[in-house]
Image 1 (cartoon, one colour):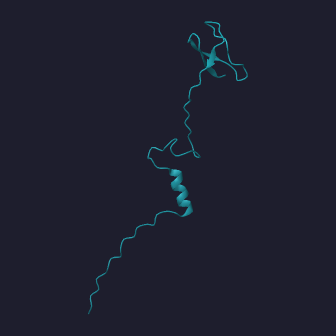
Image 2 (spheres, rainbow, N blue to C red):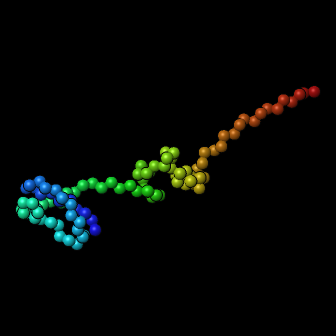
Length: 94
């Protein structure tokens, strides 16, 4: 079950309560007994790992994207290999 944080707008008390998704939100403050409770919404940090997500979400240690390089090789988009210029053989003219 999730844990929700509540804050009283009247007295400022803040507390957490474990509730089911189906439970109604609390409205009465346990300290001042007024109906001024509000749920505190805070951002949650999420990290997606695996293929199918943006490359900025979880980069590989080398900084490159190995799945992108593999796709290029399959499509035949690899860089042409550098060839050394052919050495001229010295032929002696007789």
